[in-house]
Image 1 (cartoon, rainbow, N blue to C red):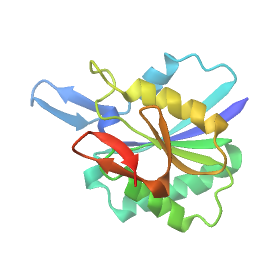
Image 2 (cartoon, rainbow, N blue to C red; image 1 turned 30 degrees about the horizontal axis):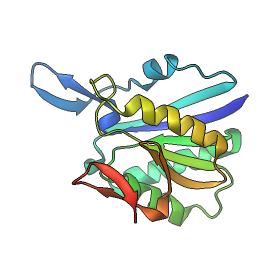
Image 3 (cartoon, helix red, strand yellow; image 1 turned 90 degrees about the vertical axis):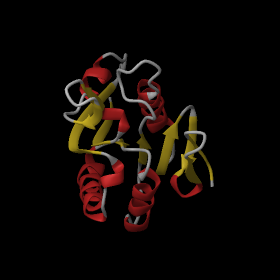
Image 4 (cartoon, rainbow, N blue to C red; image 1 turned 120 degrees about the vertical axis):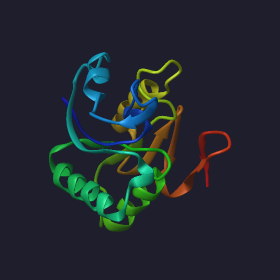
Length: 167
């Protein structure tokens, strides 16, 4: 059994539309509902809903919580998957990279440009690709997004094209 520990932090992936206010916002996690739709034989996913915020609101205190969750769950998982908002995802990945003495397993970040459940959402694709990448990648910290894998230290978000590109 391949064991993945998923740490959710919010971001666009988990945003919902509130009819009363007409805005997108982070409410409660919906990842488990989408993961149940996937066929994942021989995979056990444990989810820690750590926070559910827009990544523009993320501070180093939030990143410390992510780091603590990674350290706590690395010993019993084969890989760590972190869902994160795209605006500061690379910042958080580099924060972990600078503070983890050794990375003995794959740590994979992913997110979405369009929320899960919205027409044209890239969320399910990115989640699925991240789960496969977590199985195949060597130890290290990576971003998996739109059918690409980037080492966290060699990627940046291109806001004009709404893509991640090599740095």
